[in-house]
Structure formats: C-alpha cells, structure tokens
Length: 56
Image (tube, rainbow, N blue to C red):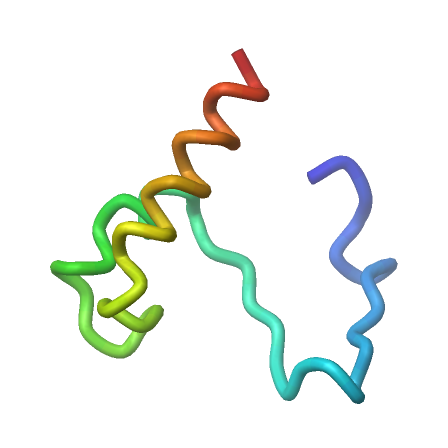
C-alpha cells in the first residue's frame, strides 16, 4: 500500500468493517479460524496469486 491507512475511507453503505491482512493469510485461510471465511479459500488463493503476479 502506498498511502497511509489514515487516508483510506470506508464506504459505509457498502461495508461494515475493513481490515488489513498480511498476504500470507490469503494463502492460509483453511488453517485459520475466524479470520476470513474458509469456504472462500480458493478465491483468496486466486487473489493472492494475482497480486503476486502483478508485483513481479
């Protein structure tokens, strides 16, 4: 992220909360309870892969 967290704004009509996670959490959602929804693990892994691809 290239801007300070304090500059981010939540669109309250669209979300109830926002959290920052280390990218590694996306790869490990199956092993972590109550972090992200484990049923979306495959989606999170695909997001992780795209982020890594774009950073390379």
